[in-house]
Image (cartoon, rainbow, N blue to C red; front, side, top):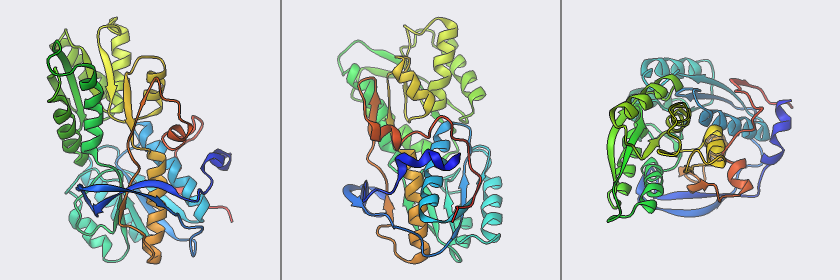
Length: 344
């Protein structure tokens, strides 16, 4: 069953990506390029993959992309997940044990920007380390796959700012950046606030917390209790998903608008049903594919670039783009794959 999902993900001649002019520095500017993926791995390499969690469908879509690319290239992987952003020590232990079991490379979706630096440096002395999706301190990292989360936050902020330019009547926003300890949160927060600075929108309340659904429901309820006249709820996909449910239960769907700062299946459905205004997509399926392909290149000494990621695009009710969805969302019937062995 698993391999029937990948008919839309057969090898393309090239992938359209953006590459920082200086690797690992989004501020250096981005250049578009057509990235030519490998036809096949030189041998059946074994990869270790570490995720922060599998609590929302974003990482499920990354996983789908990784399975698709591992299938195409003929490599295997073992996936471990830390269970949430507070679990730094768990991820350190998982990464070390996974690599020690015989991996040829580590693909790391980190729970912390700087908390794994010494671990990455130790591991990189023996195998390449590819940072995937979440940004991480540069030390010991062989290559990175990702987009600027400052820009992801800014894109979400611009969705609101475009509706409420400076000088328009003020609107109140509840902002849910994510878990304070996660490396990407400071970046997305910076971008979101900068985008709103040139609008009439005001952040009336900010709630940090892990991206599990129960926590986000509680935080949304707290925000609505503290600021009853909110106009917008904006934040991570689990925040947006929780907001849709809570607003429906409270009869406030017409009063409060919802914006997500990344895409998941539930966010997609929310946009189609006019429950969520819009969300930027950073193409998690494609990022998963890139991470596996670049890990294989790193093992084989054939890296084309050290840092690449898709161009961010906005998904709203007027967007109809098969390529956006194919490279953003795993099929609804896809289930997580933790131990992947290719068929030969």
